[in-house]
Length: 389
Image (cartoon, rainbow, N blue to C red):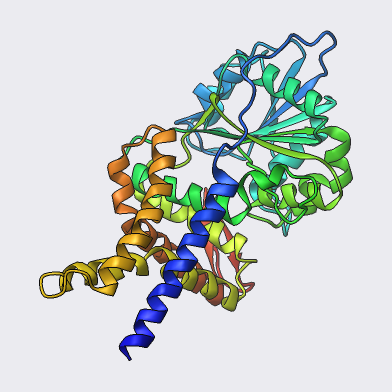
């Protein structure tokens, strides 16, 4: 029995080591948006499409940054989804600088954000379409740099990974590991490899399309029922043989996704549901099991090894647990340092993963039972015949 356990520990250590190697290949030296943006002689008209709903806390700073963009040919189309929290009052203060569109009633089968983006697209005049979020903050030169990068690379879609604005304990604990998991899940910088159509991602916080490419994949209409529409659009772009480029842009774009534990829980719960394929039970359970086996169990092994150490200092649990924990901690420490989060939060990685597993279990149960997912006053994934709350 002891030999079998030792063999399993060695196998698990080898798998974690291979995971670390995959992480290095896909995440290290991730391409960044070039700092310099030569002035474009004939800039294309960019239609900036901003869907908002009950975002009074963030929309003012977002719209101010869009209005202040140092790019001569732009229009800002803001689509309001029947906000009730003062968002409209803020938007009306920018009359003459933005075009405000009131969203029509949400059709059956559409996710609210996708309907708003589609509505904005129908109003847009630009050859380039920029979809962004109401919690984003843009530097003055961000659009010029991104358009320039799109033209130089001949990309059909450029999507940016922003600086994460993290202020509370829960944001700093939970957001970096989730970003880390997502980027490994989609292949990291391999999304920029045109020969690897399987690896794709879009970030809905900033997606700059050529209009003809957006039309070719069917736009938001093609992903009308997808909660993670950005992921789906990125996959469609590559599936059609078009060119996708994703780059980091910490100096050009900042986003604060969620500001509290309840927001983080509800936000990622709906995303887990969507990425798991609207919840085939096996797929969701399989992913949760992998998270536990690769990112929690190694720390349990380490803890048990420490417990045995007084009687047996060099036990197999301690050696393999230390080996695995080192590589897992190293990856998240590097990420935390890159986004200016204290590396001390990385030591709590197993706790963060346990929370995410909890979110996944909640999402799986709600999806399997058809209970739905509440977000911004709307409920998605609810079985027909049940009353929406």
